[in-house]
Amino acid sequence: MTRISVDAFEALIRDQLPLVELFGIRTVSIGEGLATLRMHYDPSLLRPGGTVAGPALMALADVAMYAVVLGLIGPVELAVTTNLSINFLRKPPPQDVVADARILKLGKRLAVAEVLLRTDASDDLVAHVTGTYSIPPERD
Image (cartoon, rainbow, N blue to C red; front, side, top):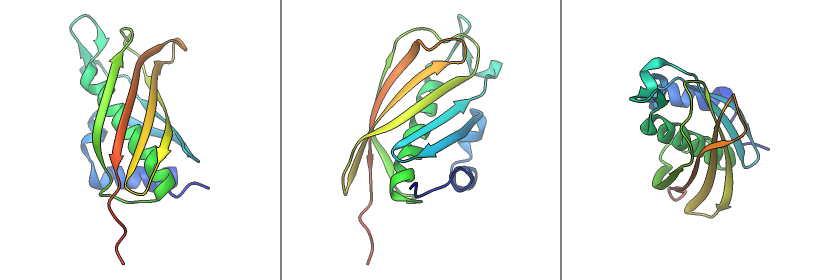
C-alpha cells in the first residue's frame, strides 16, 4: 500500500515546491515502489535545436524520484536529493515527457531510485536517471 496518494503528493508539491508548476509536471500514479509522472509540453521548455532542455528533464526525474520515495515512506518533506545522475540517450521531440520511477533500494537513511524518461511518440528512452534520496531520521 502506498503511503501517500496522488492528491496528497500534488498538494505537497503545490504548497512546498511551487517551482515544479513552472515545468508543468503532473503526477499520474504512485504505487508500491513505483511512480509515473508527466511533464506537459510547453514551448518554454525547448532549447536551441527544438528539443526539450536537459534541466527540464532533470527536474522531472527528480520530482519522480521524490514521488516514488514518499510513496514508500509517507509525506516526509525533508527527504532530499543527495545524488542525481542522468544519461541523455536521444533528443526528445517537442512533446510531453513521461517519467517512470522505481525504487532500487530503500534503507533507513537512503533510498536509491531509477527513472526512465520517454515521450508519448515512442517507447525509446530519451534519458536514464539514477539518484539517491536522503531520508531524515525519525523523531521520537
